[in-house]
Length: 414
Image (cartoon, rainbow, N blue to C red; front, top):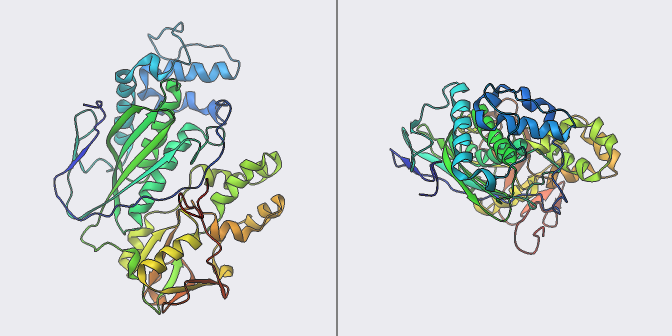
């Protein structure tokens, strides 16, 4: 048995599923050392800490020591003399798993209706969940140094981001999000506080999205790797596939694009001015915040094809066109942009349109509708679908040379 966190999932009702593996941006050199977390001062007072009883002293004391403060125990009966900054190897798998499970259960208890599908949750050989019909499922993995860096995001943000990007794939099928299963792989030298913060981010993001953490696994590896499998209920609807677009359809997106790419560019610039002036973009990179409930909204409205924008708008349009056997034409000026994007681009001396068309990781939804009147409120029409033969055309020009994130092949980011 790999560990008490359920490493497999059993569904009471077998239905159809949709599995995808998305490509991610973030191939950056590994940081020389783990820096102080940018919001570390808020963690010791977070009510969530109560659920991490045997690690509370360690987490808070580690943060306090990093800030040069005196260390005092905030947990009754806990000794202030216990070591701080202990690693996963020091504590051992069982002790760490016990704390992670406690945190997950506490988070689920705070969610409104999020645990409705759970029959058997964390702590056994497998989780069991109740499903009323067809279930969509998607798995996504992020790897330290390729998809995230601990000097650009806090561990909690990294955990939350892993959930959002996996859940987005299920939302793109038109499914209602119900649960996630998580695997965390870390080196034995990893500070326990890092693992617990990743877990907090995972549990908190799942709760906010209306899902429950059904279980998972904790293993040793040479670097931090997080895999999230997301589940969603179709609720009697047919899944919305990538290949359903037809000539004459209207293309629309669920929200603004370019914020995540702008945030990454700001962080990599190393310039404090843009980072202080445009904090919303930095936050959008660290934890994207799309309204993923729009997947169900679009499906109910009659979307014929849909995907989440993880690898950049152009890349997703190419995939949708290929799968549907059509061409698509888009007006870049119609694509919604967050307020301040042009100013952020000017501050860095780049073209904001590059962020909008090829940036990726906003995880907004792109969909094709048979009629303009079917486009839901809050969505923005950006183009239309044409017969095959022209691929993807942006502003009248072929977009074949403008690509988003690719993990492998000639255009891969290595």
